[in-house]
Length: 346
Image (cartoon, rainbow, N blue to C red):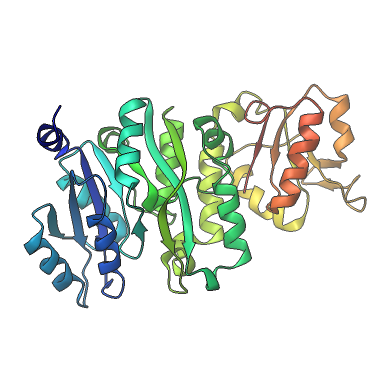
């Protein structure tokens, strides 16, 4: 295939879905990164979500010089509405998500396109991301990204999906039809991207990640994930529990599972799961002041108690990353295998 025919073949192969609202201060950086892609065979569906600044004017200027840019105006309001409206106007089967305050690596589209072509069993493909500006990134966010970058294979993502959202949304390329079939993005008091990844997982579909930094992911105080109640700890805990309560690996041993973590904060988070009718046979804790107590009619026991049991399914409900790693190591020494008879929960 020569260069010209290859270009025509790929012309509608990738739709970039870019919702934006009042992004005038960053959107030109974003558009420059898109125009600098080594793969130029894309369409950009930019959805204006009721902007009141110069964002639309900037997009109109770029669209005049680039016929690949399609500017749409969200007839509704809000990010989920803009995403679903944009999906309706994407002509390609491969959708590359992008946010107006981030930047793409020049090779992002080509690398993700090639991977998706070679791996038809993958529904959603993320990548590593580089946080910026470097000087404002806090330790907790860095730790989240360290964990993110350990979730690469479909097995990694399936086994750790209840810890945190395993894919950085604007780094993801996904297949349009399966996502549409699952209902697209959902409106609710929860992060719309994490909800989508959980639905993909529960549908038995696979996700993966390219171990390369293909996205510059901007952090700032007004970022949605910091200020929107849909991204609060309570929202994440409630959403996770609703899917975990239907997780087949847990339901196989719903009468023989335990929760590792008996502290007050852990029990509060666990209550979202217990409200779905599940009840552990024990709480596991290493605090000698807790061991021997009875909580909601369930005993608190030491980790050694597992040795006398018929390998109950373990949910590690400890949020501290270091403690979670320690629990995983202890379980593995007892013969437990991640994803088969234990899961970690964020």
